[in-house]
Image: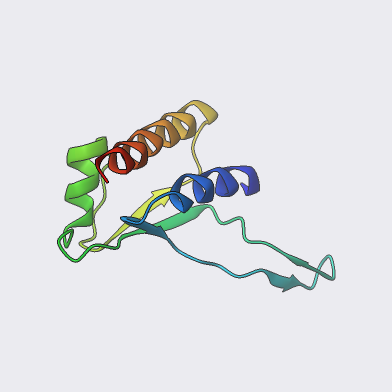
Length: 101
């Protein structure tokens, strides 16, 4: 999961239109270390006010289904092929937006 989370963060670090939830590193009692987050799900937010229906933006522009208005819940618990397809769609979405700026 950590590798997938890192890849997802990298894609959205290039975007001003979409924001990924920020999860600070935390202390893990089991390993007695501070570790970065590696959740199985991510919340994506459309940062622009005009994108009040974030799920519709993602569905129309990247064929990604969501169910919330301002946030979209992305699952990272998928097969490698499914995750890579999701990542490719998100890369195209973000790079296409960057070209428009």
